[in-house]
Length: 191
Length: 409
Image 1 (cartoon, helix red, strand yellow):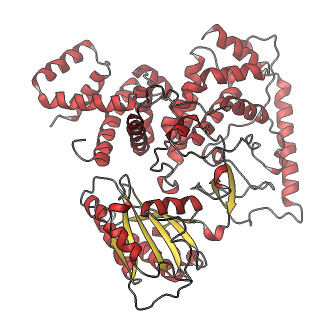
Image 2 (cartoon, chains in turn cyan, yellow):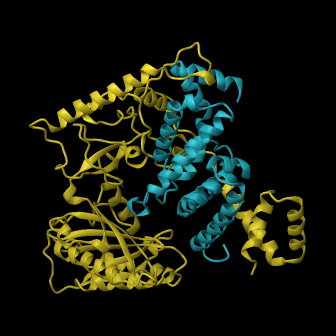
Image 3 (cartoon, rainbow over the protein chains, first blue to last red):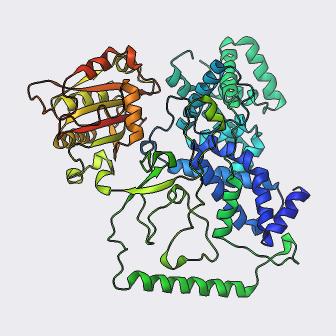
């Protein structure tokens, strides 16, 4: 664990909220992206993050410093998101993604989207892939997000999910098969 | 056909996670098998599509909201002298905690059971709907129903329904059993009108919920439908959105069409429905729009669908299934969405007309593909035919917009 993180954690435990704020600002960006891709909605992602940071804040004394603080926090956030997703039922969610390309969250960097046609295509692709992600089972979705979007290695994914590496490998394989099937359903054969 | 165990190896090969022996074996396979090469290309392409998803901007002031919420829910202080690894709580903390919990239980019980209390188990379950600031109080999304809080506050956050809060050491204000205080309110979101505003308009952080009248919002599993549940749900001259999950296959659409036909409503089936229903693997959501039903007829439609669901052979993948139903009042935003779908002005259909219904005219409804493909209003002759039919909304009737969401069973 970095010296900085350790010092901030010490300060948090002394009740210094500015230290906690610094930890939040340091890691919210990476966590928000991951969690959003797991739960679809910006408001849900913010709720999950709020709970994850609060849980971390409450459990700081149990954090032994034997792994990176961010890894520990990431694990809490991802598992919270998976739990939320398991509880949600498709039937009770109205379609928020309207035909105007609103994917529910803004991209951080729009400098490459200088051509309107390209921007619309990209927005359409974003919406489609997010919809595809939402159709995956929570466990499959989690491993795909961690591997493809966050670039984690198998052993890191195994640590986050607390499963063996062999389970990660087979789960990724099944997730990719499910992804392939859903893409075929969405876009027809040969897409 | 490449066996699953080989595909799993290809998947791990694409990730660079094979040992040298397996890696070499896969390379040999790829040299000799065109099918394996194609499959690997497809896996790689799909992975690339996911990796190309843009990095999202964190909503403004999220960090401040998180800190404020965490601090207001729990306050922790630790002695500065002890290092991180050596801290243990003093024994007296346990006694104080136990005393606080007992006091909270005592006070809570006293307030709960004291005479004249209006809250309690007899209070009916209420449903919350998400309200975003720009919709001026109209609901845009249904959430899981939650029991009414015992506190006098009427609103709750979605996170409380979906994520269990961590155990608190000593929660303030626990005497009435209230949850964490509501998150800070944020400035309303500017309406999005074009692509530029998508990238510059900040997201709303936490939308507020408002409670809706429980007689106009309900959730039911059709297989267990009690007809008495539908009494007094639908009122004349009102508009409703029905969200239903089901098999959404050809048999389900046929059953839906016949159910409406039994009420004297002929569904005009858009051409895109006919195309997509031929491909059961293309998961498609469909929508029915009917403007000319009486409340009793709508109740009968639901009862018939429930009957079909109870009689369905659950082992058959192609059976017509209708699983869950959510009934909600149609909101302004949904009215706009529906109008856009049909290429008309909002409220053109939802406003009841003064003209009495012509009992001799054929009543029409519309069956459309809804997601991921929708018909273009100008190009659909079925939509035009529906809009040209007379007496779209006679007085005393209900408008129903039923969305059938495809799920696998």
